[in-house]
Length: 461
Image (cartoon, one colour):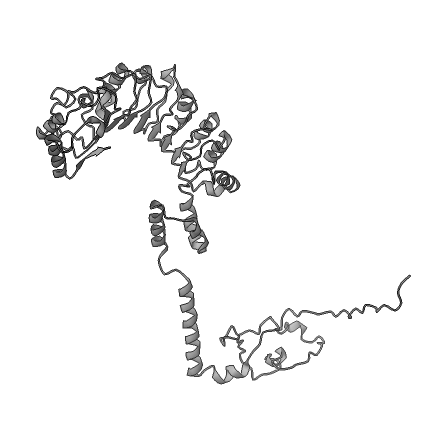
């Protein structure tokens, strides 16, 4: 039962508001029709029609900043028009000076909020910060221009680790355009986190302009190898951290179409190849790091490209003296740098003695005294050439095992320097395991001679 004493709700009457589209006069063919009279108040549109008032020539519309906005009556009905002010002060010098001051003030404020440097200089400054590792993602929040410039720089070489890897995968997967900004994809700090599908997805998203790729320690199998085939602009492929066993035949099948590849670093563990004739090397390969399951048969039967200028050997238990010497005879004349790192259990105690003979154009040499004899710097193994030997940097290391501390004597190196058999040598770095005394006569002679050549002798402890 309803409560009759309760106050009733009163609805206000509905009032229909009609919006007038324009205050301009109608066409000539509608002049004879009857028109509903509109009450004309202050500044009504009917007072400014030439048909009703012949003394009006032009109508100016002013806003609060007292600047003319046009010569047509505004379509907005709520805009105010100060006709009296315009008629009295529009042609006065005082009004013009005020308008100029207002324009100058507005222009100064716009310049203050904008950028005073050209875009090219801003891009160059941000690139310098990028190479100094000082480019921060918070720069994206400054301006839209900074966002457009900084976004490709931030994603050019993303810094990935275990904390941001999954967020990075989600970002690349959601937006296809961000992957095209990546030039160097380094996954060396992502350990025990990713999957083969994640690595393959990153390679597919960044394939348009990817130039360098460093594989993670795990999660690099068949899927990422297949994804590498579409990275046409890849120049550097670093697989030295991969702990999983890779099939070299599948690896060469994946990189055979990479025409721009210049640096190739083999994984630490790999399977041997039986059909060496099927190997197709990249045509522009310059740097090769040999490691893993590479054997003497691979070094002897493989047709290495003559474009290789730099080689490294590390973790090669199956490489023996015969295969290494055959490789030096075949490619030694083209090499500019050669590095042999310990351990190489297949090499003999004199496997590196012929390096100066087979590789006369070396500029950088890194050797281990475990595979050298005491006659390494003698005339027979370091003969004079018809041109100045270009060797500039020499690195001598040692395993520290018994019988290796007297393999290389500083007297032999000092004699080679005094006889000008190493005329361009400037930097020598050796380990303290060699037993060189810094205060001895020959070590002091080596240090002074290298200092005169604007170089130096560095003994690591």
